[in-house]
Length: 293
Length: 292
Image (cartoon, rainbow over all chains, first blue to last red; front, side, top):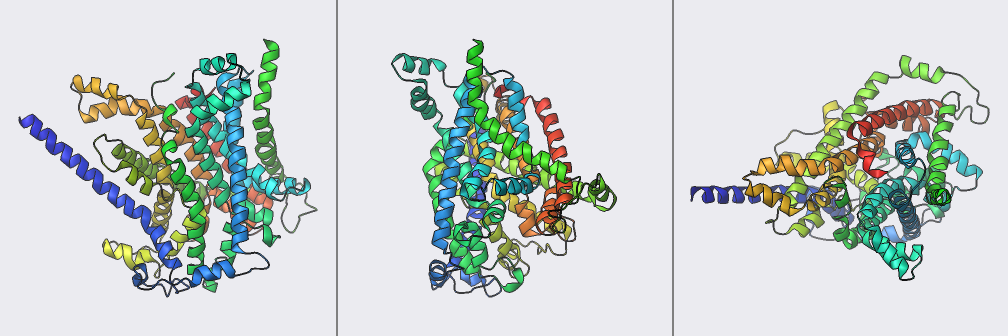
């Protein structure tokens, strides 16, 4: 009897602590975003004039949004930059998925000479920092006339796809190869079998790769900045927002409400993507755990 | 059979090409630049200067300070965010916990928001004395103010908390998905044998997650080591150079002072560290074993 009671107390304590931790972390997760959201509806342009009471405002001002959507900076507008960012990020995500799955498939299923050393090599290569690759990449891409979106997509893709390829390899390992063989006997080509079976069963990894590729390109500042700076119309939303809100120079009192409005708008597509793939993502790493195959 | 092997090779040609063109070539080029005096002043007519940049680094270049900072940044961030992510994953993985998916959806919000923008938001939060951190949050919690302009400790606290906020959802997701794949039966059997919560954790959970932890640790170690946005935006390496890491310093040398050759030399040194440490960890944990 005492045992059962002790067990029950332990359970209540365990769940109680769990909920407290979860609630605290949930508040911590939301607060900065809530703050940005509220700032975007305030008419206080800078930090100094933003008061604590602005976190629970009586009036919502849409001035920042109006400014964001109407302002024209040297021929560039926020909507144009946002469109650019979305194209860039989607292209990167798609290319990353293709490259990751092909590589993952090869590592998992195919007999390739020196596979182990190759895997090690492509893994180590991703350790190279941006500062070591940026200047040479810039010079190389300038020579190849690739200081544009194609160049950026090419530059963003490998990091994500190599990382994702390793996760994809494990996912494909866990799919019995007999599935594809049966499908191929039924008359599907290797490629069709790959699409219908491997890709479908590896959906969690596909989702993770899309998220990583998309957000990597979507949030990048440094590389896009060095590639696209001269042509305002080709800027991404991140660069555009940075300039429009005047964040370049802290002394010039940046327009925080404008920046926050842009941040909120930029957050929408990424959040949508996360919500859509949330269920899949919680399974993306499941093949890493468990007993060694 | 031999022909097959050759055809199979074509499957990894795309990734190899991309790797050679976008990683290996630039790094070798950087190595070359690091032996020249390429800078804005000598952009088209640069010349070979031998080891001069490296001599500058080791003689005047704050080498020891930067390596100390890089280690504080990398390990400080990594240990706290992996710990936090792991703890939350364990909490979410309890069978009798209600509202899991709601909590999960809220907790991945920091990851679902454009990172560069989030750092700028945090920058606004941390500004002393106008930011909400010092105006609202810290007074509510009865904690002292944080001023990263004058205090080195405060600067590190600011950087690591921000980085934790940015990254814990990723680790939570990784560990959560790994935890879910551990068969329930293992725990049931252990319970029959009279194992307590702690012993189940020690003998089932941890060993099952070993590979996940090792893989995530290496990739995140390198990612954090090479991550310069948070520091660059929040403290700019200050006060003084006390929060500068290799990469932030290299980035500033290259893009603020256009001293490309010195930046390349710093990058080469940093790369050497990550590659050597990475290979040691890979060998030690055997993590790539299951990847090829």
